[in-house]
Amino acid sequence: MNPVRTRLPQVALLLPTSIKTCRELLRGILQFVHLHGPWGVHIIEGREGEQKLFRPAEWGCTGIIVDLSDRHYASRLLTANVPTIITNPSDEALDPVNPLSRFSRVVCDNRPIGKCAAEYFLERKFLNFAFVGQVNDASWSEERRTTFCERLAQDRFSCIAYPKLSLSARKDFCREQNALCNWLRVLPKPVAILVANDVRARQVLDSCIKAGLAVPQEIAVLGVDNDEMLCETTTPQMSSIQLNTEQAGFEAARVLDGMMHNIRRGAVRQTVIKYGFSYLVTRRSTETVQIADVLVARSLDFIRINAGSNITVDDIIKNLHVSRRSLETRFKTVMGRTVYAEIMRVRLERVKTMLREKAMTIEAIADACCFASASHLGTVFRQHSGVTPSAFRRQVHGRGK
Image (cartoon, rainbow, N blue to C red; front, side, top):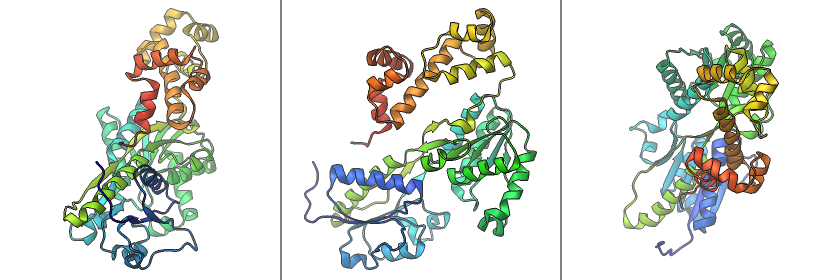
């Protein structure tokens, strides 16, 4: 049973929407407010000319969710002495001697990000790997690098890390770019690069163009955040890891709602809300597989090109002018699975991408992916994934209701 309210909560949200994670946190928070509010909300996005809340107590502030990137203004909000959740705190803020360390917080679990990136590249049979971190070597970037390297080491591969930047290079990409181009040129090729986030990955892709390096043939680039404005406008389009930040925003709002209710009972406690890896979106920047067997490589290319079609093993045989036995034997040796299993895996990955990213009906997805019907898709999807397409969509977009 929901608690009885005696007043409308007044919540300040300081979340600069120029940052992808903050935009998603805000969406999750407002989703909670829509379902379980109402709240009175004042949103501070970091836009020029927007009105702030320099006297939060006078406004009647009862709760705050705040990103600390604007430290001066954040400190003004924190004087309200009300239930507060901070997002993505720095190492300095987490130091036990820092007063900020007592607040509830939203943090990124970076380890699964590095691990899944490594496994993604290993599945594509790369032998050379590199990492480009955030310009200030933030701890979250280092955690992604460390886990990426650790997972590669399990398969006895090493990783080349881009060197730390000078103070002047951190502040000026024009000053840094020549060094980045030179570093990219001397990497062993082909190489798979994990980049700390999409903003930095765009710089890597731009530098590949300047250095005359082919993406993804020589260098495959994978970012983090899946910021579609960036990923869809790079050359080539950028693969990236989507985080479940929106769900974390929903949970942060739920926790704050409880804190605001319980403060009168003296029952407020610190809570840590985590977000992290959700899924990986493949675009052109990594759309390649490093396979020494030319026949297997050509088969994989054919399957990917026709991911939206109902192709069969016979279609591949006819296209490549090869015997079924030869293809099946060599494919199983290299990939560890049959040709048909790979066809179905690629088709269902396309279905999963549509379920995650597009507001299409199951019937429309079945038609777009050349399944006979929605029920046929449901049967095949459940056989391979253990859940129905509708259940998969609910899992991806769930809100902890």
